[in-house]
Length: 234
Picture (cartoon, rainbow, N blue to C red):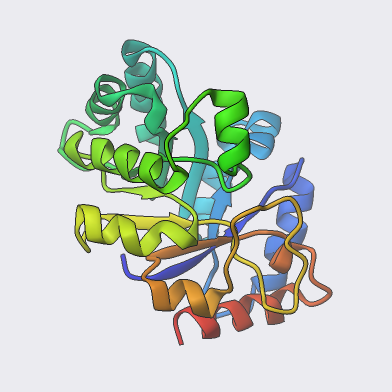
């Protein structure tokens, strides 16, 4: 898969999700869709199957983080949903990431891309030090987590677009970066702390950008999506 814009469908119900996706019914390019905790917990696996049936690629964003055996078994279940990308927290250790990879790999050797979350884009240096008691600079922590993920056999990381270029320097250009915290230059940054425009994310080397409210809450979501694709992919 090449560069792409992933639309965060952070809705609370299937009805709201399909009302949004119906707007793209006549689009040649079907949006790559992120399904997060709120929607998955509300609707269950059926929402994944229906969105997939409609022709969308899916990033299942559940951020698993538990003991290795539990994560392995959970990933084994998720491997049957035919998603394209799923993820976990890099803070769960190499052992957990390796177990997740084992669980996600199907008997025929195929599997979705597995991505590790480094630090959430709502976390800044002050919060990391005060709440998590991690004193190292945030970019150093992100690179350490990214390297652990790479050495565990994962495909890439979720990171701030501000860190995407350095992740590629540390882990190589084939190691994928999925970057939330993307906003249009003339838009509201909301609750994100470390943000960047689609064009800037492209220039710094992000492989995928995740865009939520700038598209889902736009007056014309299709136009906002097209703008994002144009800025990021061209």
